[in-house]
Length: 116
Image 1 (spheres, helix red, strand yellow):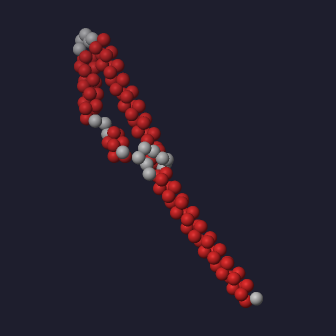
Image 2 (cartoon, rainbow, N blue to C red):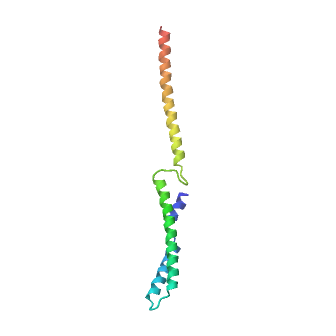
Image 3 (cartoon, one colour):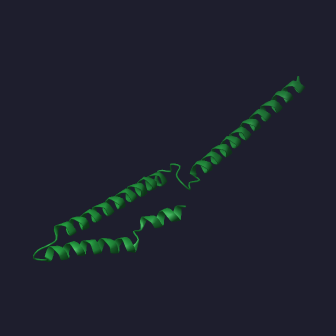
């Protein structure tokens, strides 16, 4: 899933080619003595819509990367499960230490009882 998200960040060649064609059409139309305003408007609207779509996609990628970079759970993340597992291991180790201390305390108390 992460590799798919990474590849989505790279703009496809077709999209770049599409932008260049739109821009070239507008520039060519502007270079004419009498340019077709409605054609230019259509090209400009197409370009603006495409830019808006790319902006939305980039915003989504930025949100995703922010989650990944800050360690927040995200699509494809095992961070939460790893953290829960590590915390459980820490608690188990702490319980083991405390049980060891309790066992030593009990042994000392039993020795003291047997000596009296």
